[in-house]
Structure formats: structure tokens, C-alpha cells
Image 1 (cartoon, rainbow, N blue to C red):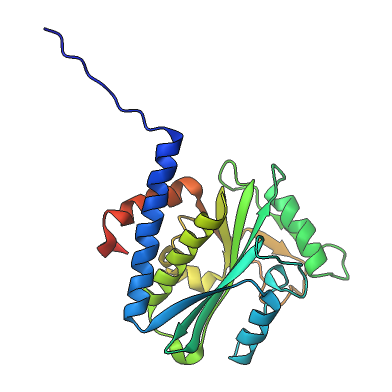
Image 2: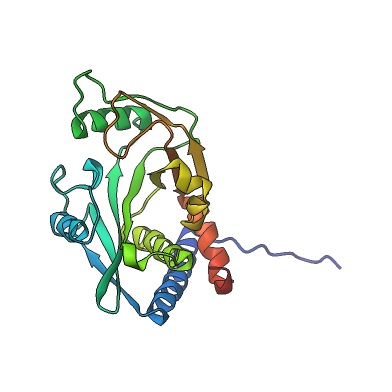
Length: 244
């Protein structure tokens, strides 16, 4: 007698539902952990107001890419996550969404940096690497401006839960192909890119005209997380919350 084997095919709708459930479970676990540490989360879309807030607690500058002074942000194009502890500011991090289509990311970066940081030499960003993953374009979420109050530093676990929660918030708000950031060499070498959930980590991606804009430099790393890697990561942590 023959044995009939039936293979279950997961539809796109089922996959999206599973991803949503994983996102809720992991995001909820991060919120719960932060709450246990006496923290709560606030989402803000007024970039100018947040810039004033972070400057008032010690942040010396905000890069043009995430500054409300250089961009007309709306609640649909970006937001900040604010971490409060005991009702007082503890940390903040920002993100913005851009659909760059099939434009080469290097051309996009050179063009936008020219506007954000005008340079007497003409080009501000001289070159940007092509050594990037296939398909590194499309719907992009950029993360930056992570700042922790000097008196609230020291908890790597708290930072991880804040950043994983941010990945969940980004995925729940926008359909993204990639989430990426630029990080300082010393921070990546200290393992923070992995702590923040980035699976792609590439050094020396940009060459800047000198003097480089404040906070920018040729030693910066591009760190990134694809939508496929995010779905895998959330699926793993949803089934192993103790690994978060």
C-alpha cells in the first residue's frame, strides 16, 4: 500500500501572520524586561522637540540626517523612542524611513550628504563602497542618534532590549527591506553592533572630504539587518525569550 505524503505550504498571508505574532511576543518581552527595570517607553514624532530634549540632558549634537532642522519629518516618515527611568530621561534613539527604489545606495548617500553637509570642495562624501549585500536598496529604515544619559549608562542588557524593541517598532510601522546605521569603529569592535541586532557589519565604507563633518569619519562601519534576517531573528527569540 502506498503512503501519501502531504506537504504543508505556508502562504504569504500565513507567513506575515506568523511574523506579526513573533514581533508582538519579542517586543512584549522587551517591554516587560524594561518595565521590570523601572523603565517605560515613549514614542515621539516631533523631531525638533526631541532634539531640544536630548540637548538639555547632555547630547552635544544631532546629525543632519535625523535633525528636524534639516528635514520635514512627519509621523509617517520617522520617530524617536524615548526610554524613561523613574519618570526621568534615560536614553533615546531615532529612525527615519526612505524608499530609495533601485537607486544605488552610494549615489543616494553622496547626494544627501552633499545637502546635509555643504563642503567648500564640492562633494562632502567622496565615495561609498559597492561591497554591499545584493539588493541593498528599496525601502530603508535608518537608525541613529542613540544617546544614553551619562548617569544612566552601564546596562548593556537594557540597551539590547531597547534596540530589539526598536526593530520591532520599525517592522510594525513600515514594510522595510533593510534597516541600517553608521557606527563608530570603537563601538563595533566592542560588540555593540551585535548587541543591537545587526547581522551585516562592514568597515570603512565611506571616504569623506577633509575636514569631515562632526561625528563622521573614514573609519565608520555600515551595519545592517535585512527583512529576512529580522524575520528569522524574531522567530528564534519568540521561541527562546531567555536568549534575548
